[in-house]
Each structure stands twice: as structure tokens, then as C-alpha cells.
Image (cartoon, rainbow, N blue to C red; front, side, top):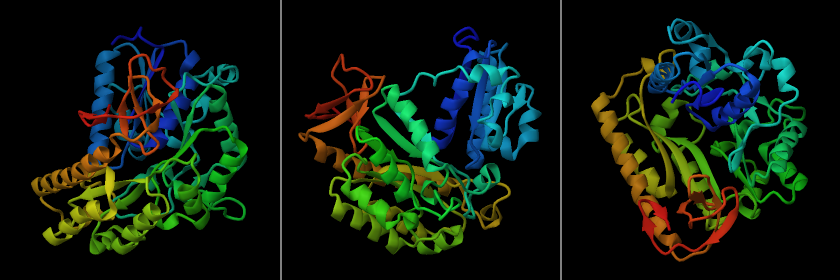
Length: 400
């Protein structure tokens, strides 16, 4: 890769909100005039910060003459350390990401005449940022600040632009998506926003929600998820652990029984729903028995989409000051949880063989069903279209 490949390249680490914001950054930099590379960093764990630094060094090697800018949570929380890197030309904090003037001097005039950059087959639409909670393992509130919600009218305008470009799936993203609305007049809940989107765009084929906090799923949202065909039957929950004591030490607001009750209720109301979950392995003070509960939650909740994070201490968080689990034990426990998810996922994929599903075609010859099951596409399938496929087998973890 050389600097001449593209005027701007953005490497994204971390959450779907970062993915959505990276698209905006590409649009801002479309007319930059000089080669620019951006690392949209993550600080969710110490390992995420290390990966962000590695991305900076790698991009500098591959783009020796480009302007290199770092943004995102890691750069916001540790601006001095990233500014001190010899490879970095500038740091843009999270709160300035959307400001064209933060990226290059003449962006204000060029941004006004830009159309959105080339979109993906699905569009990630940020509806909220920041967080008002204080989970002991998380430093993100320091990088994102308090919860800030995008008003309904503004969300609808963004979605309309994507739909005009032919996008067939909208994904609502944020740091704490189910916290949307708390800071708006009358404190509406997320269900209000989702209902407004569905009503405003009756021809929108697919609406997907990113990671949800189960205790914040309001009654209207539950009804929409389980009863509205255009809302994808794919719920990714911010579980973090399956053990009550660990959840308490994390300062999570749910317990194990509530998580199982929620997933049971979702499946009872919509049997085809697929459950995803974030799970942390080896949280400080975690005993073998606590790990066993964490492992068992995979089966009890039927987790088929798992994001498993081996815990790593993040300086500045309460959890970093707790008694730590040995790193080798953390890695073993993470591997065991991933294996449990793989078993659940294999059974789930096998159950989809022979069943027709509408699949959104990606650009790389793959696609995803409403439940976010991965498919291999027939040759010649046009990216961005929705096709009906009936798989006959599973090849390398994909339906075909």
C-alpha cells in the first residue's frame, strides 16, 4: 500500500459507533487534497490501546509521506501519549470528530458540497454517544463523556440520505444505544425512536440494533423487536458475565436470572431470534465457580454471536485496583467461553440448513440473513441486494 492509493484512509478499531463515525470522517476528508490516514482508536481495554498504537506504527510504515491523525477514545483519554508518538501528526478528540475544521483548514467550504462517501451494503447510523453508567471495568465514559442523544428528526434525516443511496439495511449504533432519549425533552425511550424510523420509512427493508443493555429494553421496544418483521431478529446483549457476584463487582444493573428471563421471553415471542452477547473472561476476583457460571450462561441464554473479551486491567478504572486473575488463567477461560459459543453457533447454523432466508449481499461474496447468520453467495450476486437463499450445507462456518 502506498500513499497514492487513496487520498484518505481510515482504520477503525472498536465499536460500531466508531465504524459509523469513520464513514463521516471519510466524507470530510474526501477533498482533503493531500494523502491523509486516520486511526479511529479504541480504549475499551488496555489491549485495545496497544492495538491502536500498533495501527499507528503500521500505517506510518505503509504511508511514510501522508498526514497521520489519531482520533477515538484512546486518543481522547491519552492525548499526550499519542501526540508524543513520532508517527503522529495530529490528534482529534472524540468531541471534535464531526467538525470539518478539526481535520483540515479548508474543510468548512469543501464539506458543504460533498455527498456522503461510498456507502457499505448496510449503513451504521449513530444515534447516541457517551454513557451515564460507571461499570468498574470501563474507561469509555472518560473518552465519550455523558450520554448524548441525537434527536429523532436528525436521525431521520441521516437515514433518508442513506436510503437515497440505495442502502437496504440501517444499523442503529451508539455507546449505550438503549440509553437513547434520557437527555432529551420528556425523556423518550429507544422504542419511540425505532417506531418513528419504521413509520417514516415504510419501504426500509431492514433495521438492525447494535448492542443493547437488557435492563433498558422498554416495553415498546420489546414489542417492536418481537413483532415487527423489518426489525431484524438479532439481539446483541451487553451481558458481560453470567455470575451474580462478578456482575455486582462490575456494577452492572442486571443479574443472571434477569438475563436468562429476557432471552427466554424474546425467543418465546419470536422463535427465530438470534442472541448475541458481550462476555468478559477472567474479571478480577473471578473464581473457578464464578467462571463456571459465566461459561454456563452461553447455553442458558443460547448465545450464538459471542464477543468474548479476556479481561485486561485498564489504568484509571476501579477494576484495575481489584485482585487480578493470572493472565494465563484469563486466556484459558476466554478460550473455554469461545468454545462454548462455537458449539451453540454450530448447532444453530445446522438448524438453518434447508430453510429459505432473505440474505443481504455484501461486497466480498458473502451475506447475512436477518438473524445475522453468514452465507456464501452464488457467483454473480449483486452487492447490496437482498436475495432468497436456501442453504444445503455449511462450509467453513458459513451457510452455502
